[in-house]
Image (cartoon, rainbow, N blue to C red):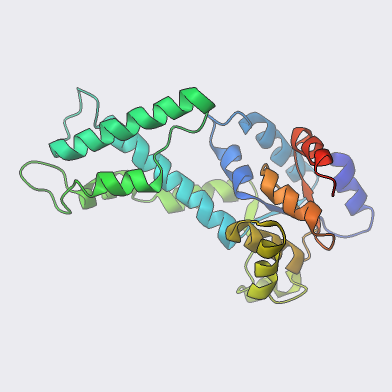
Length: 248
């Protein structure tokens, strides 16, 4: 990584990178197996003077991950026999069932023990909006566990030296070489089956003066290899080696 960055710096330009969502999460979520590795990489990028950016897509996905994580943890706390917070019986059963499911999946494949959006919606449907019959309402529950979370995690990104890159910020106009166009992102989807959100990140990279991105996502790297006009993506060696079998 350092050789790569120093090679870019030798051209005299400020080196800039767009961080994929999985990198942002790994840097802040200590349970991730890649946490220490990514934390070290980001620290070294800071030392090397590399400007690091999140996009509207990566920031939204980052916030969505923590929304689900915080709701999962707060809902799981309600299963504790010592909990003094009362919830409807049907809601309690939905929480218990969903929690057993994610713990089983974690044991099976090492996935994060976090409710998916469908599980959260199903649990939510068993709550009243307002407090009723001594049971906490969903609105009060969310206010207690989510209040201020966006500001908290935005501050975490800032403390790691990660800025927000936006084509709508007039002070960043010099960081873009072309307008962000939806047909360009759509073409990336059509070329390799890349997800729409990843296509938007890759389009941001190629439309800005950022020289590369950093990702832990196999599919993102696959799309970069498939698009000869795309800029570079920095990925773990173990993922890079996999691409050798795909005959690009």
